[in-house]
Image (cartoon, rainbow, N blue to C red):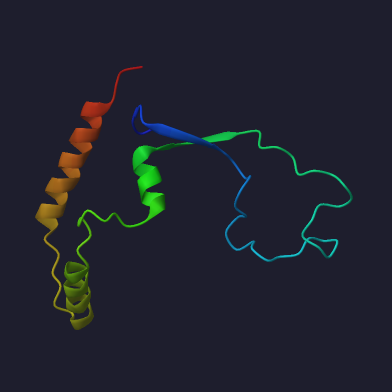
Length: 109
């Protein structure tokens, strides 16, 4: 499913640099980590395109101050103490606003 039409995409071949999560250090069936014989690993046949937002998320927490560790700590403490309350009306309003924004971005096919 395609959510938006972002012109800012980066493409990278799939499966050429990093092993899959949890696969690091595992030996192959022949006891080693190299392919059997002199066979080369197959080249990537697909490309993965990431938006600039996804690329930024993969790079980690931004340094622009948008992450407030103190606020996260306060909320975490309130949850632990059972004092955190959820305002369902505010959440509903923001969900509706986000949905309207996304619908406004959609282009007819």
